[in-house]
Length: 283
Ligand code: SF4
Ligand code: SF4
Image (cartoon, rainbow, N blue to C red; front, side, top):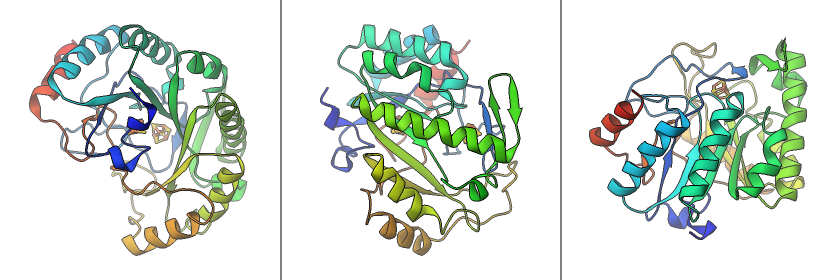
């Protein structure tokens, strides 16, 4: 599969090729104030949500089914429902098994970037060609409002110290991914009243680091999250922010805020049979 066939990184491919997310990473190593992973509903489409969590071997059985039943899957991704590198054994084993069995498949993952560092060499060897890092701020004052804690080694760090470590690891990871020629996307959540006036600075910094594309994602209120009472930014606000960011770095405009168990062409999610199979494989 040509790496140009990735529907998330290449808008021209979004109606032609699909992706499958393997939900093998349930735990997370940080707490974003906009995230709540308690809710688990097939009708809810947002990151952090999955109908089941799979072991790497269960994920292979599920993947085999999906590739037979759903046409034109070009990408296998890992995007939670927690963070792939809060579950590094499961994540790496799933990628190894997938690469062995499907040598042509595009491999992709989405992470907060805190724990990816030690795995970058092996990710490059496995030809994981696309990585997304969610990076919401490059300023401690702003960043410390976005996270409740960051688990670093055996320590649980509060918002300020936690953000500083998170940012350091994210920036290191981006530099190393680019050294390895991994196509790197940064997702930045636009959080009203917190980082909405800061996104252009993030865009500038990401351009300096040779990030390939920036995906400015409007904050989505989650009932159980600390930021549950903030409002989703309007289309006009999002458009204006993207326009400013686009002065510095290419923008992604077609993100669908995919679930951790998303399957198929973006925006045309597959129905019950695939979801039932996912739950069956998890037993
Ligand atoms: Fe990769 Fe994100 Fe697209 Fe999934 S939705 S395939 S993790 S870029
Ligand atoms: Fe939720 Fe992802 Fe943040 Fe973890 S990194 S708290 S899963 S949004």
